[in-house]
Image (cartoon, rainbow, N blue to C red; front, top):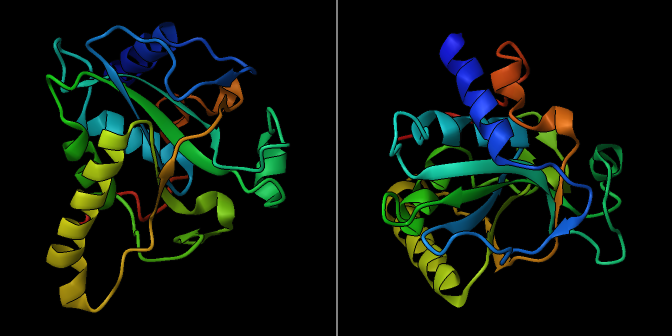
Length: 205
């Protein structure tokens, strides 16, 4: 429990939660990069990434900081609230924005892990969570990320889903405006270990 609290404290200190939009190419130190994934309830998406790529003990396993928030929605809707997103009226996805060190973990590795930790074959759904906000999506910030995401998707499809007769429906699209979610959502499952977690957020292989 103490380790979880320390991890939560560290990440809260690394990130400023803002109601202003964050550009996908927001300035970060040159040795870091940004990855944005949507795979259902963002509590569980953030939680499983941090469990397997913790920043401590230094140098950690590549993830430097995270934020959960909303992206991929209607351009005329700015600074959406959780209530608005859950209504489905804004078309935003619940997502996690990951700042990572590519010298420690590659973008390709993060994409592959993204696929390992949810069901990418269901449209607008993860487990019992249904709606456009729960869709599976990769929001790429560079052409290189788009190429890598497509390549890894094809590899994962061939190895893990084609043999089962299922198909990945994950969107791979350019990242647009990012809006941080309300403060109580940030690191929610580290601050509330008994909180709700979608059952699909686990290692599937």
